[in-house]
Length: 388
Image 1: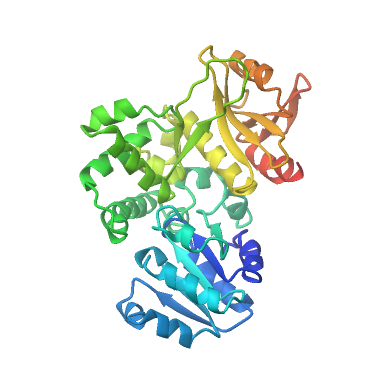
Image 2: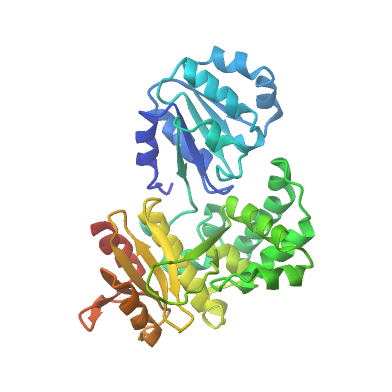
């Protein structure tokens, strides 16, 4: 069992909030984590899986059933399948507001679960459980190389062979397209969405060009944007926004697009082992997306993430803004002897960051010009980010 770093934060929320939500992709371990948390709950619990007909039948008269169990913590799995429950939860909480009354698990973001954010505002604490992170798997003896190539979904990461991992990732992708979105009531054209999803692999780490995507798929830009919202709401992709600051420069305004799990990216790109990845043109963009996602896991929601690029050529891969307003300029390179571009130094001149980093896969840390610290991803996550 690989211990999840989020457990302590969720347990703490359960001591105060009447509802705690654990959200994240399917198959990341939400149910397993919830069942581990049962032993830390301050009250007895009851578990409902909203994909099971027997549990759905129990909620035929949901108000009566939930009131009958108001002395327990009611755990409801796959809550996105029954969005009609959210107004009822709000009413029941307002009648008897105590901590840990409900623990809800969902395979969609709050914005994708219709009306949930507004209905339970002020009553719920959301926690996103991501696929397994680098720091979590390192403690279990899994290498960065394996984690980067296969991604963090437990069944893919722990598969006995790469071909079985790829088979699992294919089934996961098809299930999301063909079952999950429709179960939430979204009318979609599955072949078009599947084509868009695969196209995302070719533009991973690049600026998002809506005109090009719409023309290639033969659909409108609003439809492309709606499909991207669904993919992002399902925790599959992430749009990294450009950093806007009044520097008197002509700035790039389009976001960059990244797959959140590099295992899915490699599967969609027909890269079926790590050796193939090392010789593939995608390797630099894959490493960049992997680094950004791992930093997001450790930094949390209070940090802001951007990239910076001007029309004149100034560019840095990642601009981090800490809760205290400290600015990081971070360049990400898959190289043993990395060199910084002129564009990075121009970005530093524009942004005047508090910290400058060059993140590489492995190696001891050292400084360039007493300003830029070169370090491995693991060291940055364990020491630099946590200390600041």
